[in-house]
Length: 473
Image 1 (cartoon, rainbow, N blue to C red):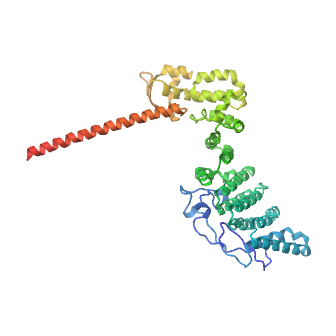
Image 2: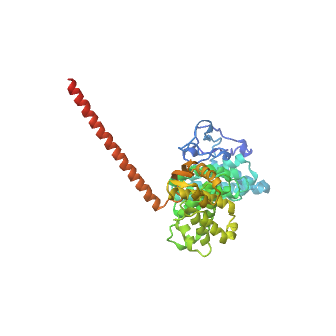
Image 3: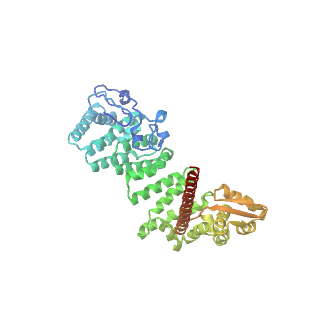
């Protein structure tokens, strides 16, 4: 029997602790779970998606185990026997033995009749007790064997029901051995062939990690999310649940604020504006996304304005000022922000926005706006007025903008001008796409003219060489 994780098989004939009867474990190279693309190693604390193809080699590769049973008893029946004996251990042999026999007979009937869902349900009956009393090695064994039953049914619907039943049981009491519970879910994930069943188990893993506060174990999987989405092929509703869960997890980890913002933006992008009820659900997230954008000191571009989930705030009785703030940060300059702050200082404090930080960001955005909308040569005096600073501060703010990669320029100190060669766009909508198309068409025309000139010169050179050769002959 080949299983995707370590397991221990009960020897019915010998009454010993479950973990004392281990199978022979053999390393088999690259772990099956990595080959399938799920970013998890055999050590839950070192979850890693590996290389671009979702696999890892060498010392980083997780080992796939080969389980060699140590008795003729079916592993599933052995699990039923072990858990039953553990459940009835305090009742005494007179009471326990008939109950254990009854459960084993019931399990055999399920196996003979192909009632795999009933078998799993029976095996999970004492799961809470087993988690409390059994060792981690025994638990990993027990649930590896239980999870392996998903390979038995031919019906994908039944496989899905079994996967949901197992994963739902695992996520109960998340604070008890959370890392092991995650590992069990990962093993279950890798045994499944149905993409949607995999998605359900993955979501259970995210919820477990969140509730148990062990989300660091699932962070690496987010790097492979685009690949997972292609595999799972889930609908809009599931995408929303996924993106929001990932964003919330990333938000709790320092250094992942930008990634959190991106997934929150992807969540908002799933709303089309056709359904008023679902649009209302997005209002809170839309507000949070705007506030996060304003707070992030090194984020100067986003496409929020045209998203229906965000645009609905413009006429909202409560959140209209928040939308106005976003519009200022994406399309206007410092003077507009200062006017807004004068009449909305309480609102800014309510959302935890620091006025001085907003000024700093708006000065950089205003400088970018000058570089993209004014002429290529911007006088110091214009920068001074727009940024509301002293003239001797102009160069330091220009250097800050260059460091933030907001634009490329040269500082002409002699003539007191900044010569801009490139400035980023704060928004990239239809107008910007049109401008890009124009630039590409111009570039295409210039390349065509250059090629024509080169071809013409080549013809002239070839003709001259031919004439010279004839004269020599």
